[in-house]
Image 1: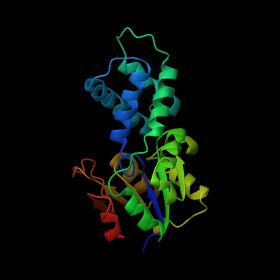
Image 2: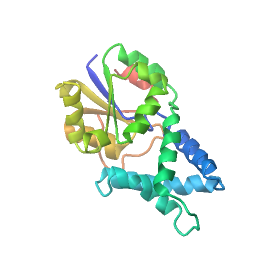
Image 3: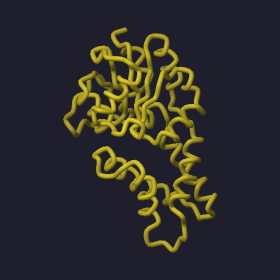
Image 4: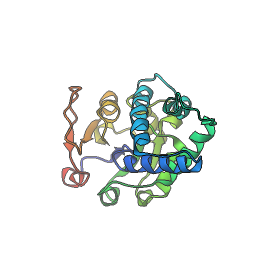
Length: 226
């Protein structure tokens, strides 16, 4: 195999974040006895997606995003909530949701026999660690690095430098970054000077003009590719 180290994004690449997010939000609403409808999830996702893009671009920090998204979600509503507590409960439920995508365990099992697998994620440390431990992927992942731990987020190349330092590795030419986001995973890998593989299950167009080294529609394609 050409690669000795494969860096893997977490949410949307290995973990089913769509399912986890829906589970966590509904359970948190139940916990606080707030009426829940599908429209709440749609509104939250729109807000949350923009806030995570702002985080990638350094417009908001890791601590602020935890509550700002709920401030926006409940703006104009007569709800007396401690948003810090609401966020903590939400993150606890999110951490329980170790749902993985189809093929993730199979692919990680295969690759772990041939190289080191390291998760590099912009997600919150406690949540990602808990989800990993609740999933079968824990048996195959060599290490995990979060943006909170590294002090910077993808696509900043510093998070990749931090990862290399953490695992005492230097072989950029033998490293591949795999992820579903062009703006964070693929751009980040490009910034750091390593090969990239865009996991693109929906067949989205490359609007940014960024050209990944590889592109796949299903995780199992990694086995044939590598």
